[in-house]
Length: 384
Image (cartoon, rainbow, N blue to C red; front, top):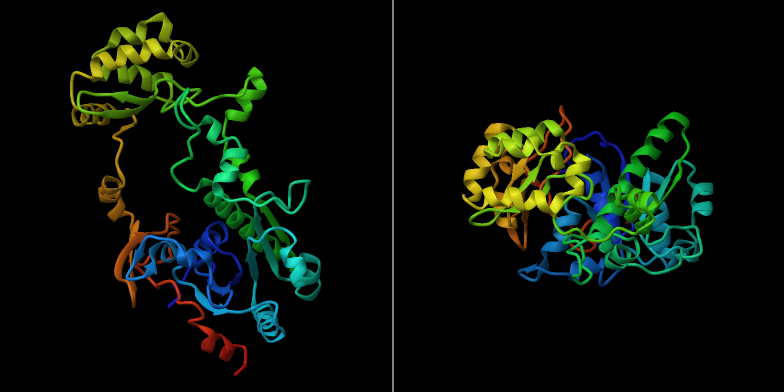
């Protein structure tokens, strides 16, 4: 049963596969939209065949396609095209993440769709967008992480190129596509007109570079990897303790002074090398050495208690097990249960968007088996 949410009543036709598009449509489903996943017959979404597997079923696919319906259609066959077009008459949004030109070859490019379904919002997430000289180039997450500059500022100086530990190329595009769709829905509510949302994974990597592009244009030098520290704020990095590591993020002069007092190193707050953030940035190595001389005298848990008491932002470096066991996870309902008929009951990540006044259930409907909802969908469309 679809949970109520701010998008209740919105119908999304999801032609997308693997991650960027399905992540976008999953977020919309979490917010109350009905999502009908249209998949190719026989094999379905490629993500159905990505591990890890539980009893032969993909937990990866489950994690990003929960709560959707599935119908298998071959859009090169007239009978299935007729069903697809019937679906579009009921839809508010169409999402796809094919290589640009694919929908045009199928006869469903923006100009055709907008002419036939003027209120339909058409969202396309692709590697390089639907315009520009590189628009037809194929891309996966790691390709755009490399080409978009993010890998160049990730890792440690002198180390090999390092991929960010999550699929930020796909996830970033999924998030920006969701924002684009919601903006287009707002526009349609005011004007009655559907719009095309064109999101490029590569563009999103540039947008996520934060201050790296600014630093390049100011200095004239491309920034490189800095390991586990912030390029513009000091102290704002990982420090060694007696038994491991701690993250300390003293983001302004007041927090810097609090940090020095909490560590019993008041003299550092008066040191002329560290009076301002800019000076601390210029003397980052000496500052780190001075702080670690104190931090390595006690364990991480000791310093966490000290810094929490002083109001200095700090944290341990958790592995995934520790992160999911953090008490805030349960308090925020960030692990929900899915009862799948094959996999059984399993925990999955919940919805980070909490909108007060709407329920955030502790359970979610499972991802559909391929073509599982064909009969119900055809009945809704008045077909056998």
